[in-house]
Length: 147
Image (cartoon, rainbow, N blue to C red; front, side, top):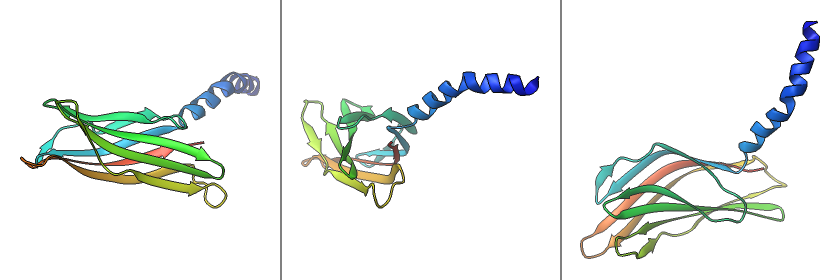
């Protein structure tokens, strides 16, 4: 009788197990966030979990303080046998101007190595005011799972 109940439970739970596995795909986990504005350490969330679809730039707010907002933008691209993860950081100033960092690209070939995820550490320093030497430094670790 116990085997029958176990079998019925597994038949009932099987579709839900597939849904749980699907939600883990195309997700970006940002952790160990460290922010310095003009040399002073600022508090920020320690982790962020974001869903990033294919070919859609996704902006993630890292910190907003004193009318200064720091974003990071991730784009996942899949073309042919290659997958790419492109990231770019930028600062939105109080007057609405935007200062960008360089684009950073990670690439994997699906035939050679198929780990199913990108991991790395990002650190960027953006000088937003040359006269007063105003700068923002942000570093974090990231892990992006793709299917």
